[in-house]
Amino acid sequence: MGLDQIKGRIAAAETAAGRANGEVRLIAVSKVQPAERVERVLATGQRIFGENYVQEAAGKWPAWREQYRGVELHMIGPLQTNKVKPALDLFDAIHTLDRPSLAQKLARQVQDRGSCPQLFVQVNTGAEPQKAGILPDAADDFIRECLALDLTLAGLMCIPPEDQDSRPHFIELRGIARRNGLKGLSMGMSSDFEVAIAEGATHVRVGSAIFGARSYL
Ligand SMILES: *Cc1c(COP(=O)(O)O)cnc(C)c1O
Image 1: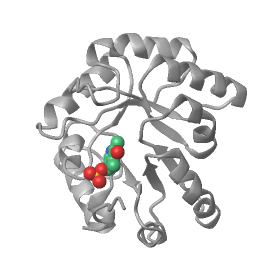
Image 2 (image 1 turned 60 degrees about the vertical axis):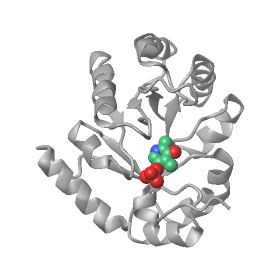
Image 3 (image 1 turned 30 degrees about the horizontal axis):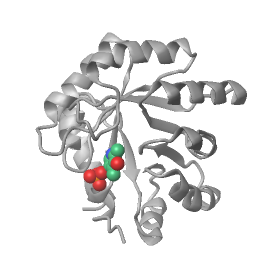
């Protein structure tokens, strides 16, 4: 596919939805991709990237940040409580705030540092037992709990079940965000980002459609 085609498809989806061009932020998901592929995309000017693993990101991004100005790094994988410190050293945004213990740990770190990353609460809209995220029924309470800890929330994030139409999940996420006064919606991946944009996504997370298939060796 490539970055240019994806940007074109995002712009077309924005227009089709009656939204301004450039409104949706594209997070290029570079997890597990070979360095050459990521460097090619950096060279074209893309600056927002997503990673799933703290350790992998720590090995790759400090050098790229030196070399390319203005990189914005988003953590989109599950975050272990004992990795919060290194994660906050590395990432500008965390999309996987999914449980009280993590909120508490983040709150302590945010107070110490005096700055808060962009935070998205992950909602398990499909109520899948193997998947991370707050259940939709518990989302309002959890959001209130995060706000009471003085965390600033950018919005919500979801990963719909693989075998289902994503649209109802995106609509549900939007509803939870609206009734809680949250603006950001991190939703949509390679296979469904256009649907997500139609349903109000502010951030889409696109990996394989930009970089090619991931090979986990
Ligand atoms: C890997 C990943 C993506 C990107 O997936 P693609 O299907 O390659 O676009 C997006 N979001 C999350 C949370 C991921 O783990």
